[in-house]
Amino acid sequence: MNPVIFWLIIHPALTIISVFPLIGIVSYYAWQTRQRRLQTLEGNKSKIPPIVGREHVQIGRWLSSFVVGITLLGLAHPIGKNIINQQLWSSNFFQFLFLMFMFMVTIASLVMLHRSRQKHWRGIFATLTGMGVVILGCQEGVYRRTNEWYISHYYYGIVAALLMIFSLAIIEDIYQDRSNRWRNIHIILNCFALLLFMGQGITGTRDLLEIGQGL
Image (tube, rainbow, N blue to C red; front, side, top):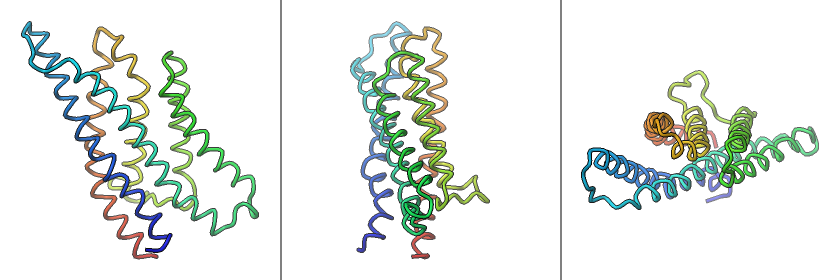
């Protein structure tokens, strides 16, 4: 296996090893958490331990971070390949610095989003992280399949990453909102994200084969 093939498969390999198992765990805890809350609201004593809610939040944070991180890794491969092919450090040094800066700012914003508790800071760092993902995704060399966006691994991945960023940003609001509005929004959006993850399993395999044929 040469370095080119290795960097091509590291993104799907890490997704299978880390993201897909976490999706199953988070989905299970989400279902358990909802069942326990419904049983409690009906006045029944639930046999589901209260720890499931905390575990759902904690592992959900891991899942969101892994999704965004692996999305950045997936973008780094074609962007890095384009940098090397065009020798941007000499042909367009400003663009080279800009790309390095965007990767660093996006990663730093994601870290700060995890640490932020105040609403305005969560909004700022979520916006910066999302902007970084979108801007990097628009760079030359990224395999987007725009003519078939509705079955594009790239667009599925970008939307899923943005949904994970949004989920991180509203965690505090979910537990502070007595009307359950944010909780319902969280459930609906993450059910949609689950469908996107399923679609990524299919489209990612297809794109990997197509890209591999061009090597």
